[in-house]
Every structure is written in structure tokens, then in C-alpha cells.
Length: 240
Picture 1 (cartoon, one colour):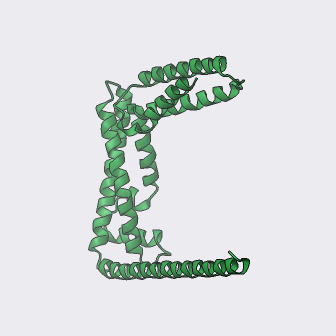
Picture 2 (cartoon, rainbow, N blue to C red):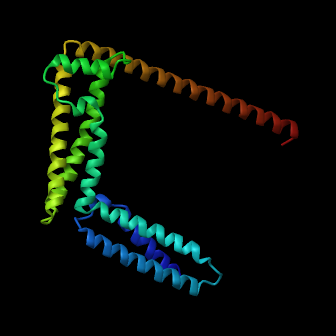
Picture 3 (cartoon, helix red, strand yellow):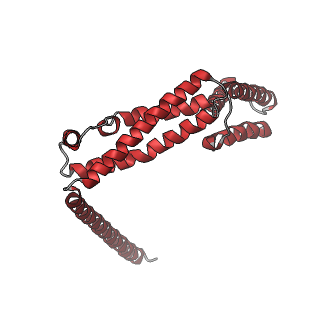
């Protein structure tokens, strides 16, 4: 019984811990592997029910088998070209919602008008826009990596190749827009002054946090000392 459980768990963990390191597989291969795992889980569950010294409710084993099979199906399909494109498109769709990333601005005036509109409530709009765009860059690069891997793994699937090309075009457009936006912000005459204010504010915030942590540590030490003194007096009064 224990051996079968360990086999099932080990297989799922082996698949789950490294989805990004899996080599490219086709959807049919993923389906076959999932079916094999489901069969293994079913056989193991039957063996457990037969050999268990105590009665085990079959629904528990069926539920566990379904969960493991679903996890295997999900992870394996993530390694297919279609799975990589799907993940890339989810990232790109999320990035596309950012105005400065999806829009190509013909001139600086229209660009900085958009910055003011998007970051209207921010004290340092240039820095807020810059930090947000910097955070988006690694996500675009990751999406590009997924698309390039999928494109190399398409294996003569014309429709999937067209989807790869469309996603690649979108990713390149977003990357160019973000890069241009970052350059425009850096070249703005107010960027350095806002950056100085931001760094000073960040430094003050860090100092405030450090002082608060120090005060909390001193307060904890005082409480610990009071508790220790109280325990000593209590032991003295009780004759310990």
C-alpha cells in the first residue's frame, strides 16, 4: 500500500516541481502521459482498497487520483507549444492594458500628456511611470522567451505558427513602446529633480522603518525583562 502511494506521489511531484524545465512535447504526448498516470492512480487506488488493513472510503482515493491527474494534465500541457503560447498571451494581454505600453506616441507632447492622465494623482508622475514600465520589461522578455520556444517547437502546425507570429509581433511592439517610453522619461528635464525627491523620500521611509523596528525591539526587550523580573519575584514568594 505504502509503495503504491509513494509511486503516485513521486510521479506527480516529479512533474510539478519543474514545469519550465520540461522539454517540448506535443499535445498528444501530454494526453497519453496523463492517461497513463490516471491508469496508474486507478490501479494503485484499487490495490490500496484491497490490501488496506482498515476500510478506506473509495471516494477519498478517487478524489486524490483526480487531483493528481488534473495537476499532471495541466503541467504537461504547459510544456506544449500551444501551452507556451497561451501563457505568453496571458502575460501580453495583461501588459497591453497599460496605456504607455500599448500606445505608440508620435511626439513627446502626446506622450507626457498621457503620463499626466495615467498618473494624475501621483506626486512624482515621471518616477511612477518609470518604475511601472521597468517592472513590465522582464514580463515582456519572459513572454518573448515563451513565444520563441513555442515557435521552435511548432512542428509544421501552420495555425499554431501563425499564432506564434502574431504573438511575437505583439510582444515586439510592446517591448519597443516600453523602451521608447523609458527613454523619453529619462530625457525629460524634470526627471532628475523628481528622481532626487524620490530617493530622499525613499531614504526617509527606510529610516523611519528602521527606527520603528529598533523601537519595537527595545519594547520587546523591556517586556521580556519585566516578565523575567516578575517570574523571579513569583518564585521567591512561592519559595522556589
